[in-house]
Length: 223
Image (cartoon, rainbow, N blue to C red; front, side):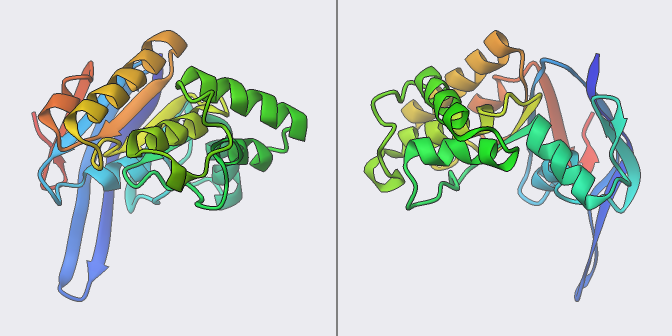
């Protein structure tokens, strides 16, 4: 089953220096349960493609569907609701709220879908245990190492049981040893939970974790 499909997906930006074709005529199909890596030179369109597939950027033309639901032209409110229920995000910068504990950061997505407060706590605690942070529930981000902060971010992405996790350079701020730890954790999540992962990376080592590889060059799929 294809979880994401696109047809001639393009995104154009109008800049004072001219038109920028960030991605051009991207047609692809991604099977449920895949670990997808998106690579390419700086400026090749990797993050634009990722954010467009996640419904955070509207394409200029073309179409894309998610779980066989056409999302290209749905209303912003419907798209936001779909993201909250089906998608998790992991960013290079961790994007944790600095004044909230690990547990509170992970509970946030559950609050957005109106999960009862006690259930939020129980689910978030369980997911933090899954990523090995059962002893760091009440720590603030500044009290955690970079690797631990990224594990909190992964737990937050997992907590709503998403169909897909989108990861934008998730090891970009980590040293090689921590990078391998995070990549192995993502691979375990992919294999054990069957969650599809789409990961943008500039690292050749990280790209090898994918069983489906997308390479972009100047906004185009590279064959």
